Length: 500
Image 1 (cartoon, rainbow, N blue to C red):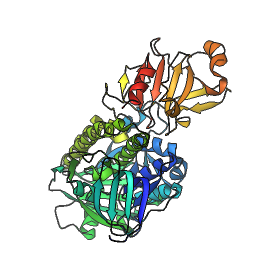
Image 2: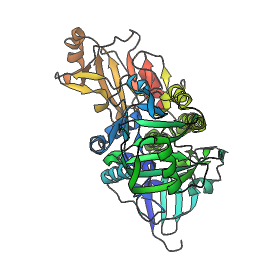
Image 3: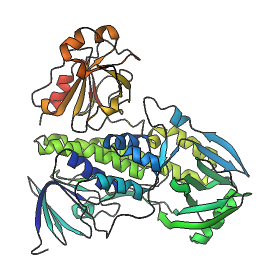
Image 4: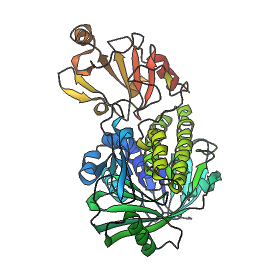
C-alpha cells in the first residue's frame, strides 16, 4: 500500500490463531522483536478445537499457562462406546500406559479460551484487520506487504490457516484428498437423563459410529454428527436423540453450530525458496478433526520452529530448514491417522477404537518420534532417554535436597546438557551461550563426593530410578523438549548443531 508505515522486526507472523500466538510468545521469550498480524476483525469467540493432548500440556506448562487452563478445563483419559442403550466398552490404556509424563490425559477446553491465555502472556498486541498482499524475499530479509503497512523482517511465519495467503503467494501446492464427508458440530448445554461422565463417547447404531460426544468445560457438550440428510441444527439434534436412545435429550442452549468438510492436505514444501518464509499449523497441513490433532500439531510446529529461527538470527541458518525435515514427516503421519479415524466412523465403534489404539502415539502426542541420524537427532537409546522422542518428565532431587521435575528446569532458550555422573562433556565455544549444563548423578555415593566438589550442588540433579549404561556420558535435551542426543560425545553433537 503506497505511503503505508514500515515496521522492521526479527520475525513477522501472519495469523493469530493458536499456532501464530504460540510462535509470537516463544519468539518474545527469546528476545526477538515480533509483529503479528491477522486479517480478522477480532479474536475467535466460539467453536473450533476442543482438546489439549499430553504433549501440548507439556508445552503450555513450559509457558506457564497450564495451571490456569487446568482450572477451567476438564481432564479426560477415557473413551467409551455406547450401543443398544448401554455402554459396551471403556478404554483408557493408551493414556495410562504413557511413561514419564505428568499429564496422561486430554484437557478438554475450547480454542477461544486457549487463545485468550496465550494472548494474555504476549507482551505485544495483535494487529487485526491486516490483509497480506505480497511477500518479497531477498537474501537477507523478507518484506511483507499488507493493505495497511509494510513489514521488513529476517523471517516470516505463515500461520494463517488452511486458506493461507502466505502459501498461495509462494505458490506452494497444497496436496491431498477431499473425502465426500461433511460433518455437523454442535457446542450445546444438555437437559438429559443420560448418565453423564467425563468420557469421549462414540455412539453406535446399525453398525455405524456417526455421533461422538466430547465433554467440555462449564458443563458444555461438543457433538460431532455425520448426517445423510440436510445438515441443519434441527437434523443434528434429531440424530443425537436417535443415538442416545432410550435416554431423553433436550437442548436448552446451543452456543455454536457449524459444519466442516473433511479435507486432507499437506503443503509440498514448508519453506519459500530462500528459506526465510516458513509455514506452520493449518497453513502447512489440514486434516479431519478426529483424534484432536489440529491445534495440537500446530502448537508443536511452533515449538519446533521458533528456536530454529532464533538461532538463524544468530547466524546458524542451516538449522532452520531442519524444521521441515522433522515436522512435515510428522504431519504426513498425523494426516494418515486422522484419515483412518474419520473413515472408520462408517464402521462399528469397536473398529474405531482399534484404530485409535494403533495410533495412540499421535493422539496422545507422547509417542511421536523424529527421524534419527540427522543434524538435530543422533545417538543411541538409553531408557528413559531415547533420541528423537519427547524428553521424559523425570522426578529428580536437586543438590539442596528439594524435588524437581525435569521439565521445570528446561528452558526454551537453551539446549539442556546433562553430564552423567560428572563425565567430561566438552561444550564447543559457539554452543556455550545456548547451553544450560547440569550434572546428572545416578547414585548417592557419587552425589556426595566428586560431583558436588567439581560442579557445585546448585547444578546437580540426582536420579535413582533407572541406571544408565556406562557409555552414556551426556544427554542433550533440545529447546523444544525432545531428546537430541544420548551417548559418549555430546560435544560432537553440539558442534554439528552450531556449524553452518
